[in-house]
Length: 171
Image (cartoon, rainbow, N blue to C red; front, side, top):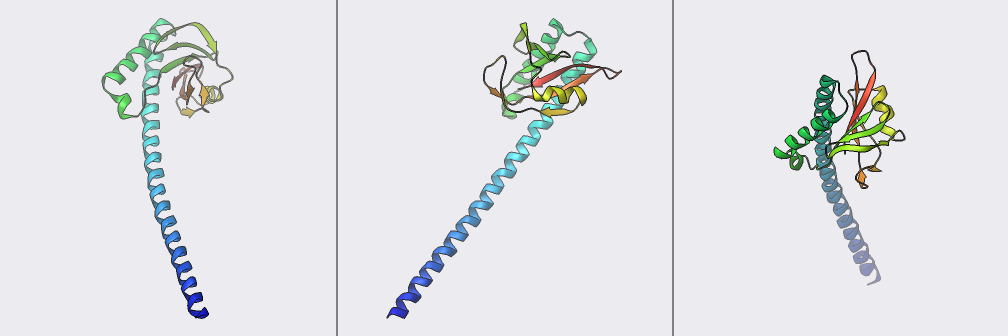
């Protein structure tokens, strides 16, 4: 009888281990599929962001004016984005910003910044200055205007001579 009980216990324990391993395997596959979906969505969002910011930068560069006209450009692009429901499709409802070559926030899609804000401590701005026209993603920070946690996505602008003119930011 002791041998029979021992065999039953071992078999039950083996079944439990098999069930647990099968459960772990199924959950791992499920989570891997979710992670792949998130990665694909985020890659699409980054591609969209780079297109949007480069279009914005070319428009600003074409005007060669970094003041009220910049605000108009930011607002118009933001308006078109919202009208075409692009914000909802991309899971994004943030703002567009223009940071000048001195690393001051001077304009946003919400309007002109009345008192420019020094953003020289932001990690992504150094990168946009040295690698213009390339997408850079900063660390999550508290937005200077919104006061909320944001993930800044930025592209720097350089003149034909290579001079840094500023940075457009999507948050």
